[in-house]
Amino acid sequence: MKEWDYSKPWFHGSPMLLNELLVGSTITQDRELARIFSHKPSIVAFDENGTRLHNGKLCGYIYIIDEEITSEDVYPHPATTMNPGEEWLIKRGLKVRKIDETKTRAEEQLSEEEEVELLGNLKNR
Image 1 (cartoon, rainbow, N blue to C red):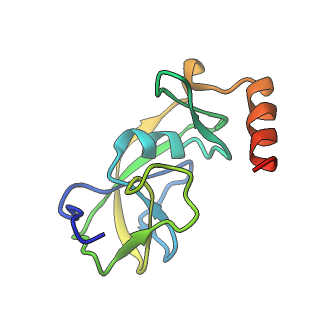
Image 2 (tube, rainbow, N blue to C red):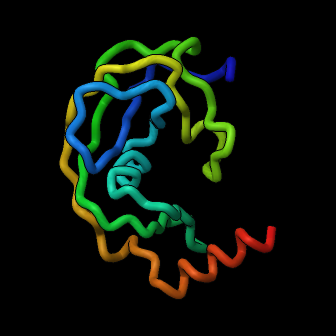
């Protein structure tokens, strides 16, 4: 993405304590999305109001990428279900710094019925 501002902060969410990300890890410039990823969901969806919902159950951490990122370091996730530019993969290991701890929020949790419905919709694509 040539018109992307790579100088803005980049984040990673994980339930694990980290110092460095490995090649192929996911990063984003959307701190809230990183917070959701910190709960290790297998599903992230949007309701009719655009609110993000997920099925992650773990507490975790938000990290900021602690070094400069250029277009040579990242590429858009090829199989993302997110909007363009929200989810990127890294081409090299990157140092990270923990900036926050996270807890799940009940209002963001998908119900079992919603999970089944979403998974059924994916299978029918």
